[in-house]
Image (cartoon, rainbow, N blue to C red; front, top):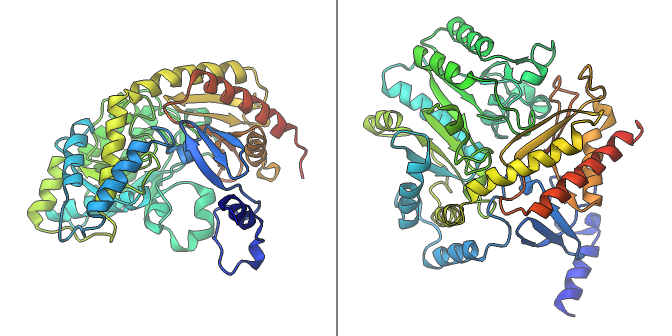
Length: 461
């Protein structure tokens, strides 16, 4: 039997009769088998081509099929693949930290690498706690984040998150963290949206929450510079980040920027916080750090935070696969590609083209409330009524229908739900690799328009 015949036979094995099976992310429909990727495209086992307008989950930046990344991975693994972080460091890791440091909007950062965004958030929270303990303020244990946020899916990161649909099944296990309103001008002051639309209102609210909790009790404030899939590429109102930073500094509260989605060029800057003129105390990144080639992320502490913890003599934290040798080698090669090919500038340039195409396609659409974008992170918010901003009811599953239509058209989109009130609300996101061509940008916008039209025309039920 040939290799092709074996592969075809495996594709025909019914899941119910398999002696072992994958517990898949999707349980309601069959999904294709991905076998090859190049640039912004993926092919499945049946030879069908898909345009990856989502970059996976807004992850892929340097593009699929980069042989130099595979070579860096193999070369490092052939020499040494694993060395536990409590016993060894590595050339790959030390070199990566030295090359990355100047790009981070932090003062002489120290980088704690882990296996992904959720672990990075957990690490950042423990860093913040360790910093206050080291400074003799053990009472600082309250962490504040925002509604309409997403910070990961481990229990601590999920509790920090303000994405209601993801929290709902696990609410009995949550409740240690506090939340303030989302910075979400489109739905500001709607009763069920938990959103504010001005920097002044947002800063005043945070100030009140800190004062009520007790200024010496609050440890950190955590937020995404630009909100990802929970709200759909939502930038804060003008002046938001300087106002929030001032409140945090005045109360001695650490500012943690979650750049898991926005980092490494996604918004047309190396890191989104650069665009707001604010330097956080701790920055968290993942996704684009290795562009999908290796599970990798990090929490980076600025010099004062790191030095306080270092002088204490220990950081009670760690994971088996933190400080990965191979992960660092992959991250270093992805960083090299981003710089050598000027892909951050490419994200800004192609992002402008994408925004233009999306506005042309949707500015007059009766079921698109707003088009939003920052570099190659873009989204549209779907509404049942454009004038009142009334969302489609969740039972209509408009998002799911739009993504299904996109797949039929050979284009993969990303999505979010529950943005309007925690239940209703539909977001379609775009985040292609930075190597996306002009023609592919046009194909994405056209397919998205067709997918939305099909979705809103699908009858209820």
